[in-house]
Length: 224
Length: 49
Image 1 (spheres, rainbow over the protein chains, first blue to last red):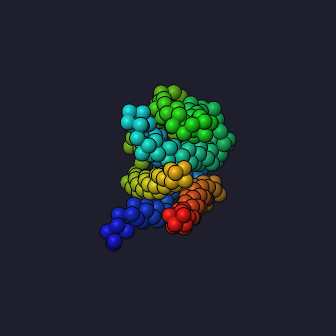
Image 2: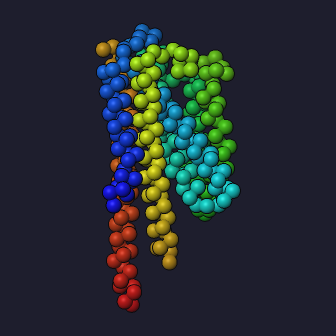
Image 3: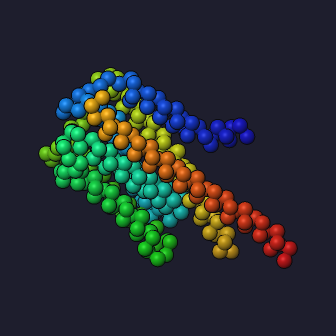
């Protein structure tokens, strides 16, 4: 019994602990850095990058699960893809919103139609369409199949968003993490924040998957 | 603390959205639980019939 409780909740507990540590690091540990003359708003970076990472991760999971569903027609894979897409839209929305809030003091405007921001917005629309296709397909299995195809094709936009700042001239800041632009404390804070959001995502995905499985079971029982 | 308002706005939005989604999941779990209970209660009556 105790082992089952541990197995059920360890990820959520780890996530909460990491989130608390990340918050302490972002508010108190990491030094203030002035970027473009805006010191405190720069700290949005420690939330914005992790939500970006989680959004990309969730769409990668949709991609893999969609392929698996089309190959096996096992509902489990469709459930994983659907749950991950739902979370992906939430984290992509957060990515866009936190980016816009950072942009206001840095660029003077909330939005510019530059390649990085535009491709990120397209990504959001693709996965909203993924959910809509399910709702409007008429039949559940047909909706799952259409969504799986969209989940595979739509993933093309993820590397485009990630590489937009390398491929084209954009206003978006360069990838400091890979260019050695972060000092020790900043890198540590970012890594802890990344781990915290990843745990949070994994916990939410696990719960969403279980709830969807239970809903499907209920529908099957009610139809008997 | 220059531009702290923007930081706190981003912080508040992230956690409000996460909390909102968690509440959505809690509500869904409650609904499923009630439906399961209703089915369990209906089952003995159906078995007796």
